[in-house]
Length: 367
Image 1 (cartoon, rainbow, N blue to C red):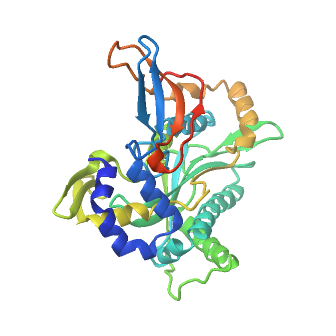
Image 2: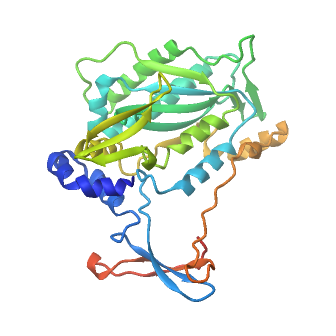
Image 3: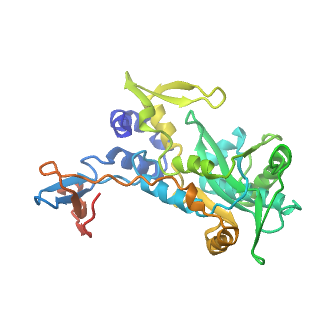
């Protein structure tokens, strides 16, 4: 079921209940998701190369929360990260914000999310610098998630980290030695303690008041993920496609919306049912602050170090392209009359009813 159809059905009830709690970014997201690829969105004109037939096609919204949009951007991000892989054992580290601080995160998302990502990296950096086997600069690819599988507000950050450090002066890549039980990176409980201390100090330094009660025990996980490419594919899958797949929206009837999700503990598929307004509120809880970067590269895996990584690939005779998944090309739009490929000739065409009329010429491209 299309998310736009759910919004159209429950938007009035949702705004009646939640308008006073919505930010400007959330209202923009609601409008974008509602209009995506519909007659209310701007149009682009396509022309057939064979019979000169013209047609108007609605634009996609391009919003980061839309399940339709930015599949191509997801592929490009994944390809960039794959190019930074090095021959080492990789780990997926996860740092979770405790439930007691989630209300604070919702109220000051721009501050708390930034602190969350920065402190997670600083924790990894500190442990790497204290490890005698890792002299040099570590690296991490970090992605912020704000939702659980049930779509509840659950901020946490994933970091894909190689068990290696790069010495730019040599240049050289030093890796942790494998033991009988494989490679060991860092102690989870120790990381959680350091992460907690850094987070609390950073939140206070930002001028934000901490709640009166927050837990002493925080959670950090460290999981081996082999050569790293599967972890990157997992993170890239949810980076630009919103928080729910439309095929997981099972029903929309009698004022309620039902969707399925996979229970992380049992591995089984389960169903959750909410009123239409509550469902839309869950979706919009995960609209990121304007301009916020949910994916960041740190240390030796930063974009500024791509030349160094390329040199290491050459010296180590390592080809990261072998891990790249096959790119899914955008399907061509075919003419309904002759079957030839149709090309874009104009974009961003708004009808008079939209209030603005604008046409932008572009180079003809097949889609």
